[in-house]
Amino acid sequence: MMVTVNPCFHWIGYHLTSNLLQEGIEVIGIDPIVDAKSDLLYMYVGRNSNFQHFFQRSDKENHVQQSNDEWEVDLVDDGLLVRQGDKERNWIELPLLYGEWMDIQRAGVQEKDELVQWVIDHQATYIGTFMETFLERFFDQPLRIEERVEDKDTITERVDALWRCEQLIRKI
Image 1 (cartoon, rainbow, N blue to C red):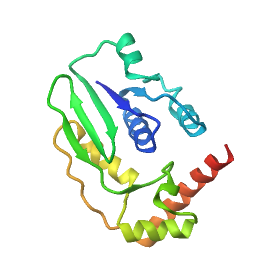
Image 2 (cartoon, rainbow, N blue to C red):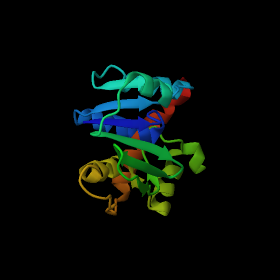
Image 3 (cartoon, rainbow, N blue to C red):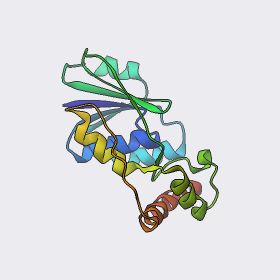
Image 4 (cartoon, one colour):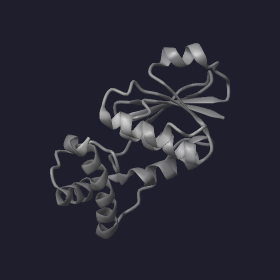
């Protein structure tokens, strides 16, 4: 089985790529690597022997023959467009997500405590929880997001990890 992820270094695409690789699935990532963050995320997955990277979809099409057991996942706006081979495409609307490598400034957050409150106020879903649910159902049935209520301590712990990633990005 092979999964193409586009863009693979968007923060959500990166988590999808990383989780698929952890499951031993061959991943083809498409992303032009236009900034230091993309370059950094490439370093986390680029050495995995199950990962191939292409800057554009046309590069992939010129080097890899598509097969019927290949899945394609494209991040488009606030959703995932998923298809297998020539089968019909499925649109999966993303819940409001938070997690490591997200663009916290897009959420209008400047401080760690503000981010904890933003997660609580928006009832955002942690990216790891979303990926766990998504991968469990990705290959067998349509995605149904199960809402999980997280306590403030769990959210704070996850925001701490997210904040460490944010500080790393700021140093670059």
